[in-house]
Length: 316
Image (cartoon, rainbow, N blue to C red):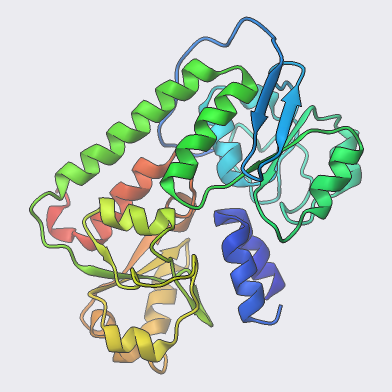
């Protein structure tokens, strides 16, 4: 189960992984891209990160290690892939496959990381695991913590990463492109019925996206309603009985190659088979590597969610 938590952290960050651990007892991608010339002046950069700490660099970062794949994707989308000197085991794609791996984002090899002489490490904003940040800071390696819980966080991360890499103009371009993509998806579902959606972040125990997550906001942009929009937790654990009581109109499963098998398993599983959505063919898949990434593929994620919960709007 710990490996599952590590995988979830790699996808959506520490908050969901920590929720899973508590409940259980313990890619270069597509999307919007920016095109702008790099900043010419290597002046000092000083920013407050999402942990409330002031981080100062002598100039735009040139040797970067990102511990969260969505952050890696954003660096690539800003045109700064050549600044990356390592990847995690969960980063994939032409821009990063050639790089040495430092392991997982939660438990990287500090020895390997330090040997690469980074001038900036991009980590996660969390109160749960500050020891790595403190260790690296003590070694003189700046660590900038980033939170990507909702779409506002994503746009702030884009802006901050633009400044940290000297690609502020590219960050502005990327943000505009993302907003335009989201607006286009929202416009495409205007006037359509808004079905209720259960997003299965994890199935045992059932975890879902709370209303303040980027996933819930993507569902809303895509013309749906989060069936657990009243949840207080960011990533709440819910009972199958409560899911059945609410009878969501769609069950959305973030899936890879085995996604179809997972939906079929749910149809036969105790409790889950009581959901009309599963019995009536409204258990649908979305690509996890796209929808679960709070980064430059937000527009692609919204389109995938719209196509899943509004099949009547799909283009032939």
